[in-house]
Image (tube, rainbow, N blue to C red; front, side, top):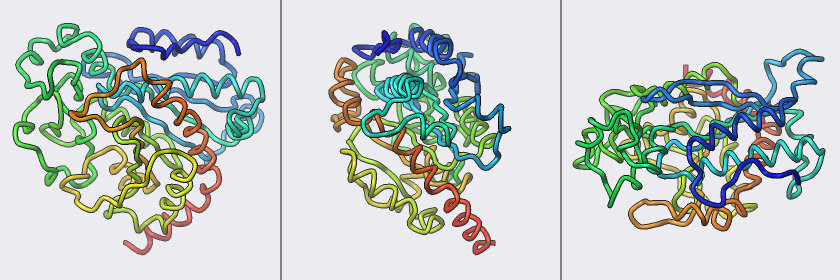
Length: 342
């Protein structure tokens, strides 16, 4: 294999992520391009990367019905395993596509020729920077220094630079009833849902990306529990068990156990995956990548390969393959459900 660009042997700093994105786009320019999908609170680029067969699209024109899958990391600042996974998957998939080689049983070129794979590795770059370098490194320092940190220090930071937990900020219809744990009803490091739904620029970036693309399904990576949240009671019926079939295949192939269907919108509401199911009417999966840790802090970054990569490296290809297989069924089920609920 060519010398790797992405180094996940230890802490993966934001400046290296941005640098590596440009290097990957240069090396694999035939199949990979980047787009700034929004700006963070502190004005940093939120970058989306599209892995696809550009040559075939030029020859045959873009297809509106072509399957697409969205893979998202870094919603929560302290969960940088998710960022590392997205970046390393991106590099490996490009490499194996470019060499027309199989990767752990997946024919990478065959899959990517049939689908658009979108990666947003670091939705919350400001928060990631706080975790790695402290609130002193933030342009929002004067506001942040007054906010409560739920944990021993800034490395426990989960929110964005406004002290909003992005995964409680999406307007899936449950924002008003979404529970705030006592003490998290104001900006802080963890669990504040914001002063109104969809209030954060990072939230808006993901919403706009989804509205501009026809994603067949979506996966968001988080970092505690080695499990998958795959359905909620508010949307599960619309998929005619399609979501559960995908989940069962995932649980059989990987270590991420199948959770029960989430039933209380006061607790599950306003996450990105919940918003995606409601608004996009497509399946969405939230994978918790590493073993549970008391207090919520992620394992040391140096354990990424051992705890995450060896288990999750082909999950992106798995979901791309599922999106291809079920694309027509997704459209049929959703149209049927929409007609029934009018």
